[in-house]
Image: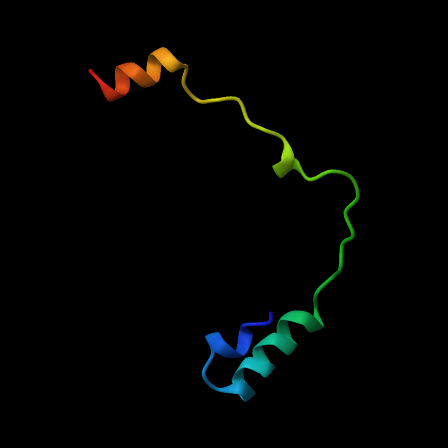
Length: 55
């Protein structure tokens, strides 16, 4: 939200839009580790990557 006014040229319009978004918003506090921290398994094995790069 720090760049909100940079994205919308008119500050009054930017404030009005943001007020309408935030007015009906609910804050949800999440606990625990982020799922983004978990490393996904590779989509392809080394051999498969080699086949793709050198058919």
